[in-house]
Length: 117
Image (cartoon, rainbow, N blue to C red; front, side, top):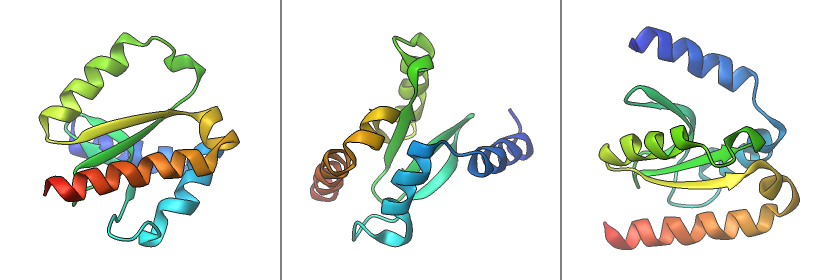
């Protein structure tokens, strides 16, 4: 897929964020979690990921019900990992109903990634 096409897809996804994406972004933006600066709808290879911390090579993906037992998600994760990123996934309803728990898990991953550097 061309870079120009992926840029358009990224823009469209940013403009049409889900409630879960908007909520999580309100906690991730502007380096609110300290050392980790996240960007949203970031291109890695031929994919656009929901959130990425480039410094720590950490990707956060939010999944709705359409992702249940998705074979394509596993293949997508494998490709993103080839680029050196660790991928963590959360269900949209977890973000909406247990935001603090999701943030705690993200902080654990940030700490782990920082210790590995």
